[in-house]
Image 1 (cartoon, rainbow, N blue to C red):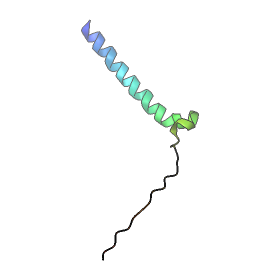
Image 2 (image 1 turned 120 degrees about the horizontal axis):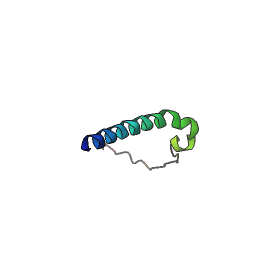
Image 3 (image 1 turned 90 degrees about the horizontal axis):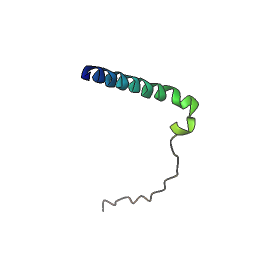
Image 4 (image 1 turned 120 degrees about the vertical axis):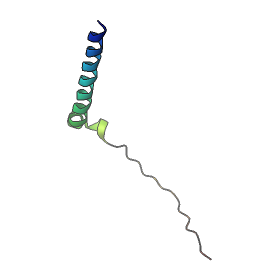
Length: 52
């Protein structure tokens, strides 16, 4: 009985891994907004040091 549970969990982990890889490859085609990076302009002042 315990062996069947371990086999079931192993198969479930394998199928979950396959689903994750499939989502990584096919996801940008069906869900492009989820895979686009958020863009924002960043302005930072820069102070250059004097060697004097």
